[in-house]
Image (cartoon, rainbow, N blue to C red; front, side, top):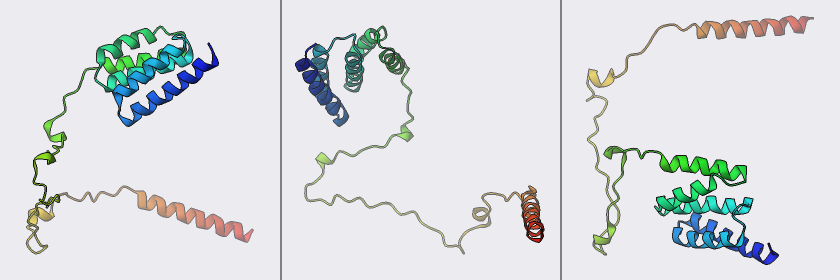
Length: 172
């Protein structure tokens, strides 16, 4: 491996990582593929570039390519690369969980709004009750647990013991 190849690898590798972190997955995939060409695939750096490429594939919703590359990396000579590939493959193959509709926030399409219209949304006010309007049921939402947990007595005895020992030490 020449120094020129290492520099080209490092340049494309850093560009691919930066593009992935910015959300430009297509550019990230392109750079990371080129970076892998400059480094032996069985090297530690080649494996690291492969793991980043798997993340770029996954982010761009190219799951089949991500799984195929993960399966290659599982038998990589570098232990850390193998472990990362196994973890990522486990995550990719995990079943997708259904999210209840209540958990989702709907984002309005602002492209169809009037250009001159106000962009501020006024929150709906709830009718509030004054303290005099609250009923007995409103005030008694949670019953108070009045059982004694002995903490106060324990704290009192502990403070008394500390003060007594300080007084005894000051006389000695």
